Length: 397
View 1 (cartoon, rainbow, N blue to C red):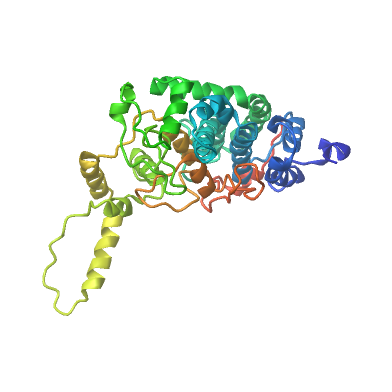
View 2: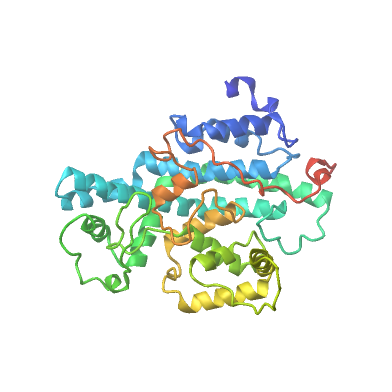
């Protein structure tokens, strides 16, 4: 139907133009299309419009691009069972029964979700971050040198960003299988394993026998690694779970606590509390009022929060492994979402890839392609700080 009317009927030169409205709806339903994610209707529309000179690219459109990128990878990997397929023979050869086989495959699927998310962060999600930086969306660091950008400079940049996306996304999405396989090889190299050893690790968590002691990585494994969502045990593997609140805590400290700081709450739940302040005799003053006022003061005391963060880092025994591929994948998504989580998480809550993406509403009960989780709601903070006339302006060459 879209092809019948032609791309020329779809306008992307206005923030609420038909091209964006149609595109946004097509992204919501692209998981239901029986085709490669590089050949969806929305991809056809955006490709046809890639040579547009005037493009009104707003924060909403960028969020929809984020949905297209992440969901495209997840749907392709899940539908093709890339990781499960690569490990299928190895897992099945070590499985003792159908139930054990099914449980092992759930872990392989969760790892596949992580690797698909990681692959989307190689080229596509950085474009999302760049576009949001250009539009000064809250939660993104400004691009150095953009302080003096005016209407003309911004409106010359937007078509370039759009064209880059329209050319890059089909190339990347048509190669999901190879890219996820490459991420699997990266994971295996990081863990000093081959596919058969990885399959054994996955299966060992389901077997009654103890896992082998001969691998170097085994000494570094921390125990009690169970997903809070599905209760899958990742102890033997030693990787596969992430703590979303830990990621937001790390990112908040790295950015100077300037984006929606929740560190005080995190630290208090971890047992690190502000030192008691000496309060003089207040007579009949209500102690609850005093405590409330004190908390307000602490909440804005960045110096104190930094001291508490250092105190926590000194005693923290649950530091994430530097360069952990799953931690990195979730962190990239967090940044692309404007340093916001969609779901609610407790400080020590650890989730596998499948449960995490369900919580962030990128997957439904049946996985990324079941159609029940069509769109992750955009955060209220995901808006451009540029004046309206900047985004609605045109220029003449």
